[in-house]
Image 1 (tube, helix red, strand yellow):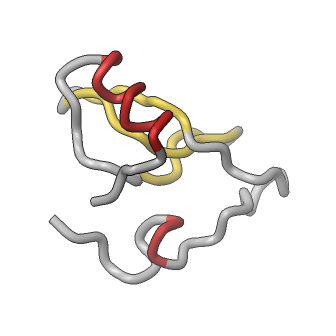
Image 2: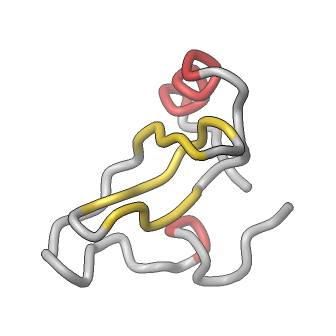
Image 3: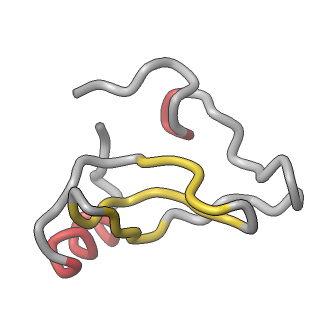
Length: 70
């Protein structure tokens, strides 16, 4: 599934937290659907920059390669 314009940082969302002003850092996050690459800050999860992965290891390999997209 493709991300909508402005839905995630890759498609134009702000790379800066509107609450604290810090730049978002891509990291591995988890939800009920699985592991994913996204951003979070003081106000909680901000974006999902990838699809979902069954394991932390699989998400880590993709994060380190920089080849993630929705």
